Image (cartoon, rainbow, N blue to C red):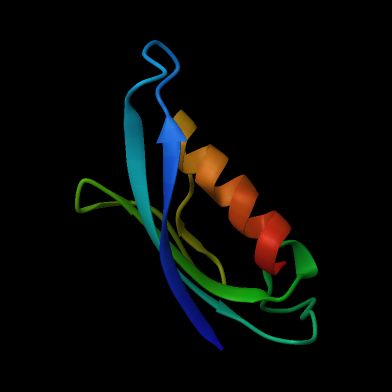
Length: 82
């Protein structure tokens, strides 16, 4: 099943500002040791910040999360879908 949405990550320096992370996740009911992130249910994941792909997983990492907002959004998505 595909899920799409946005996550607002508060700015570390200015709590009134947010970084908007738009995401797409393909997840299944059962985990996959072969294709899932950390052997879990997510087989595909994309996170974009300001139109730029900041994380991409398609049965393996193409672009790993590097910046703090992307890592935080990734953690939230792992909790929610994996």
